[in-house]
Image (cartoon, rainbow, N blue to C red; front, top):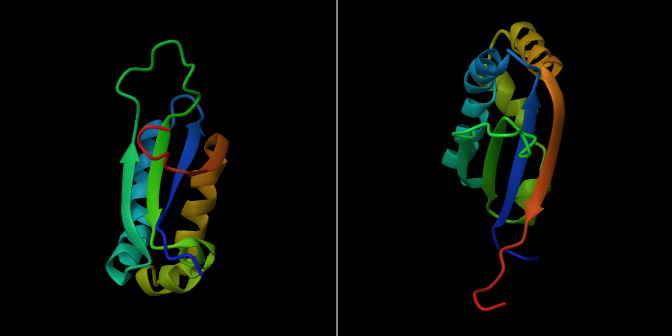
Length: 120
């Protein structure tokens, strides 16, 4: 088993005019799940980015979340549901808000990153 950390970037393109709403829902309903996984050691680091300048739109995304997973096994493990149940006792509200957060998306894609050694 490979115990090397795995970095992934998660890109989100939000429907025009809904970025603030999407970020509010993300920070309330999903970020705490990620941070709980940082505390458990499954995730080593997570960061959220938005472009400073929107320019001509070639970036194609409004929010990028990077996650450094402990290893490949940690990335493939699916334990969010149990965590969400513990963090959000009102499961129906949490599920409805997460559904709405994804309804606000125009596009979403994930990219597993491979770091290149220096000099390559």
